[in-house]
Image 1: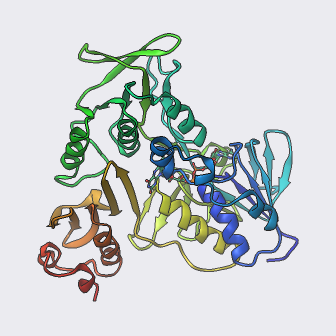
Image 2 (image 1 turned 120 degrees about the vertical axis):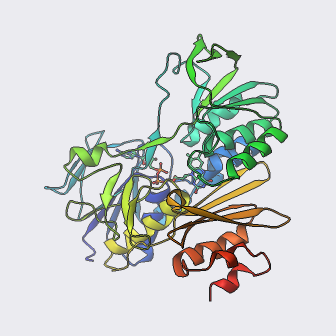
Length: 405
Ligand SMILES: Cc1cc2nc3c(=O)[nH]c(=O)nc-3n(C[C@H](O)[C@H](O)[C@H](O)COP(=O)(O)OP(=O)(O)OC[C@H]3O[C@@H](n4cnc5c(N)ncnc54)[C@H](O)[C@@H]3O)c2cc1C
């Protein structure tokens, strides 16, 4: 790593922010350019649907580092100026403003954007999507006490928004087209439990319903369902998933397939191009498969791993995937790759429960409801002792950490 080298990071989000920190941490003394489409310094997104909406926290609460930190660490931050083209042949990026920056090594951390509803009326005022701090602040302004808030999508974001809106005294309806909430979480009992928590907190949860249009003007006033029902709404929040921002990479001839394809060393298909965070479809050597994750852990730790590799380390990014969600007093944590389970084993106690997911007799995933400590042990078991017997997993008299061996 020569001091005359330049590392360019495209995307000043969570992964981008942690990557530049890790580059300096690994001793890289050259030029670092961090280019971001948003006009804000890198920040973490989990608080957007929680503390920012429910507790009036703002950008300062979410920032990964202060403005001074970037100056002190000689990070050239170029904000509000998205990168519009990459040229891996000439090793250059071109920003929207026309600025060009040459790189020795490039990290793509362009994240993901919200999936649009694509129905009549989804561009009316009062229809919200939630990805960025500006989205959260605009939504918060509409979460007035007594306001009728319709949430389209019963996944993590939709349910966290529903909880925050209830905490602000809104009247909240959640609409989910699938028969159960949390379609991404395939384990018996979880969706029912989460639905129960929401109902007990006054959320009107409706599953198996399809939205066909949003009506009103200039503000949204009504949500029309396929069954003919019409719901009055003062604001609508759409949370139906995200799509990775791969276009920049794809246009430059870098291989993509549901994300920028990277190996376990975060290397993309072009020389000296790396990627980290929501935008990647990466190979996880621990689980022996490719995956695209949308989680804090992946944004943070894959970015750190990528930065270290860019600085010359030879350590792969190999972690058990993990994410959490907080809704009311419910803490939900998910680890591993449980969607492929052929068997589940539950362990319950007074505070909550944990469901272990197994495939071919091996532990591949776990979902914990209000059991954060059990989840810590479960993550280690998935990584190190997938052969742990089902009977031991089910027996609450055996502390999980004892099974790690
Ligand atoms: C509301 C919300 C709540 C969440 N809660 C949780 C949670 O509780 N637990 C959990 O594990 N995860 C949670 N997540 C997920 C987690 O925050 C994301 O996985 C993480 O932010 C991904 O980081 P990233 O850096 O890859 O992408 P992002 O944080 O999306 O950052 C990408 C950045 O790149 C910028 N960009 C895109 N294209 C360009 C371009 N061409 N040029 C320059 N810049 C560009 C974008 O504008 C953006 O600023 C939540 C996400 C959201 C939105």
